[in-house]
Length: 343
Image (cartoon, rainbow, N blue to C red; front, top):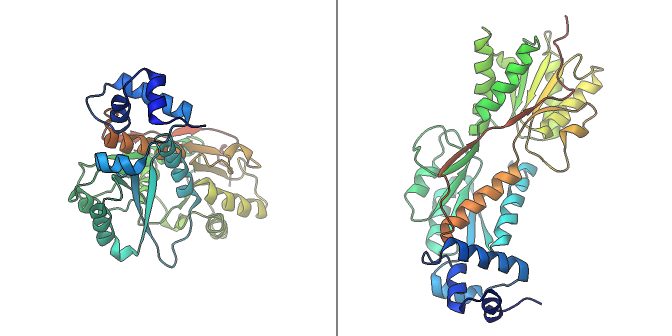
C-alpha cells in the first residue's frame, strides 16, 4: 500500500514541508535531498495530490505535444518508440502527456492555445522540417520546449536533441565506397523532413570525396513503411544499371527492400549490400534479418527518455543539462555488406 506525505517524511527523517518542496522543484532544496526524496517516491509508490500541488505551485505536471492530423498522415511506429521512452521517464516523476490534435495549417494557433491554457508546463517538437516555422512560434511564447531534431534554417539558439544524420550516412556510404561500390541507392524518409535531407547530404558528401555524383534516379523519398521500401527497391532493380548497394533510412524500409531483393533472386552481402538506420525498434532487430543488417544505430527510445529528463529537470529545477545535444550514431558492420560484385 502506498504511503502518504506524512509517512514518507517520517521514513526519510525530513519535515513534510521539505519533502513537498523537494517534489515541487523548489531551488532551496539541495540536490542530494531531492534525490533521496525521489528515490523514496519510486520505492514506496507515493503519489502526491496533484490538485493540491497545482494550487500550491502553479505547475500542471504535464508535457504537451501537438499532433498533426490529416488524411494521408499515417501512424508511425518510429514515433511510437520515441513516445515510449518519453513515457517511461515521465512515469518516474508522475508526469502526464497532453496530446493536442491539430490540422497542419492550424499548428500556430494550437501552440498558442496550449501555451495559454496552463494545462502543460513544457512542450516538445518532433518531425522537424527543413525550415520549421514552429521554432520561431515557440520562441515567442513563454513556455519551455525541447526539439527532437533540428531545423535547417531560421533561429539556431533553441534547445534540441538530434542524431548526427549527416555523419551517420557519410560513414555508411564511406564503408560501401571502400568496399568498391559506386552505384549506391537511397531509400529515404519524406523529402520535407530535416533528417532525410541530412542523410542524403551525408551520402552525397562521401560520393564527392571519391569524385562521384549521386544519381537522383537511385533516390526515393517516402513514408517509412515496409511497403514503400519494397516498391522502391523493385523500381531500382528494374533499371538498366541497378545499384550494387543500398542505404535505407529505417530498418522498416529495409524490411521491404530485403523482400524485393530476395524475390529477385539476389543474395544480400554478395550481389547487393544493404545498410539501414537502426532506431532500435524492439520488434525489428537487424541481427534477426535473414542476413544480419549492417546499421547506423541510435535509439529512439533513449532519445525520448532524454528529452523527458531535460524537460522535467527544467520544470522541477532538478539540475542543468546541455541545451543542444548532437548524438553520433554507431556504425555496426554485419553480414549484409560485402565487396562490390563484378559486373
